[in-house]
Every structure is written in C-alpha cells, then in structure tokens.
View 1 (tube, rainbow, N blue to C red):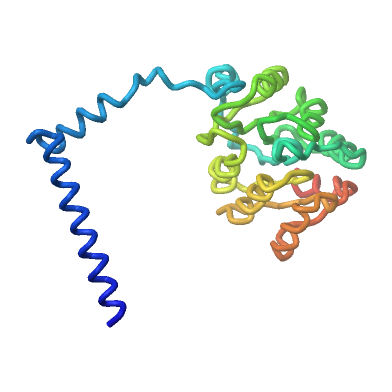
View 2: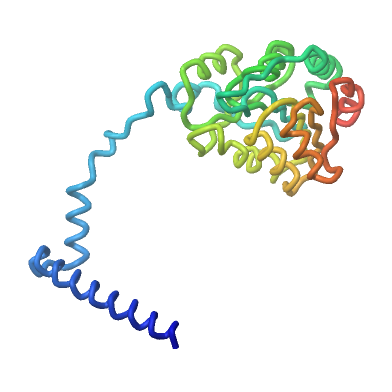
Amino acid sequence: MAMKKAEDLVLRDSLNVFEEKKKNFSRINGGEDVRLFYERRISEEKGPESSYQTPPGKVESAEVLSAQIREMPTDALPVVLLGGSFNNDHHHTRVKEEFRLFIEELVKKADPQKVFFVIGHRLLGYERELADLAGEKFRIFAIVPTQITHAEAGRLRRYDLGIRISIEPTGLGLYKSFSYEIFKRRPSVVIAIDGNSSAINVVQEARNGKKKAQIFVSSHAGLLTSKAKMLEGYAKLIDGTESPEIISGIR
C-alpha cells in the first residue's frame, strides 16, 4: 500500500508538471505545428558545419596521411606488436635489450612474403625498433585514430608505414579497430611487450576474435602479465628469449 501511494504521488506530480509544460509551450509556439517549430529552432541554433575545429595540437589523420592509406594484404599473417602506442601519458616504454634482440631475431628469420606487422599510432618504444629494423624488408601497418599529434604524424610519414584510419578519435578506442580489421577476419599473432589498459583491451579482443590468435605477453609487463594469467593458458608469457619458438609458429 505504501508503494502504491508513492507511485500515485509521483504520477500525479508528473502529470501536473506535464500540463504546465504544455501551457508554456502553447504560449511560445503561437499555434505553429510542433515539428515545424522544432525544426526552425534547431536550424537557428545549429552553426555552420565548417565551424567544427580539430582540437588544439591535433591534425586530421585522413588528411595528413592520405598518401599512405592502403589495404592490409590478404595473403599474409598479421603480427600485432604492442610496445609503445598503448601506454598512458604517465608511462613511457623503456626498451629492454633482450626484447630488442627478440625483435631483431624475429625480423631476420620471419618470411616477409608470409608475414606483415601491425602497430599502433605513436611509433614509440619497441614499435620504433621494429620500424627501424624491418621497415625496408617487411610491410608494416599502423592503425591510427582520426586525430593525431603533429609529432605522431611526422613519425608515421618518415617511416612510410601503411595506414588504416580508425573511426575512434583517440588511441583509447583503437582496440575496436584491431578487432574489426584483424581478429574478426583472419588468424593472427599478438606480441604484447608493453602497454596499459589499451593494450589489455587489444589482447582481450584477440582472445574473443572469430579467428585463432596466438598471444604472447611479456612477463616483465605487470598489467599485461595479470591479463595473460586471467586468460587461463590462452596467452603465453615470454621473457625475450623465445623468438625461435614464435618464429617457427608464424612462418
């Protein structure tokens, strides 16, 4: 009974408010058709489409990287390297020698006709190492948000990477594009050496993908290691000495 009384009170007050709003609306629209009234008001409030401004310090990826936008190959295995683009501003990737050698061995032994690499948009840490070591031998693609900094655009142009533009405005949502471009469409390999929550999301999307993904996670990366353990054996922890094993699986 108490609940019923409360409902009746809320309903009565709501109807009173609604009736008051109807009276106020009748006074301001002067009998004009409701739809036409709101269309006119929206038109008056809406500024010109050209008034949109890119945030300060950012550029539109599709404009500054238009010459590098191209499709990923369909006849090769994508190897996703997480190691620089997937940190927040408070965490900077420090390249460890064992993993630099790991990438060097990977580049020496993998077949560029059967493998291509995919990285994020910042081209830092291990991703820059990969670009330096493999840029002239392998096809490397970067998945980038719709807006990037001038520095990021400069690095991506300097290495002449293949570009895929995400629908996401920032790097935090790039995992969705990795899923759409790769994990839902084809088998893949994911090598997660460093990264925070954004990298964890990429690893999870690889695990959830329709196609099988081999996932290797650095045992030196705390958050990624915790995630790998949660995947109950689906991801393998590595310390930088396992390049021969991984290479044999992606040739």
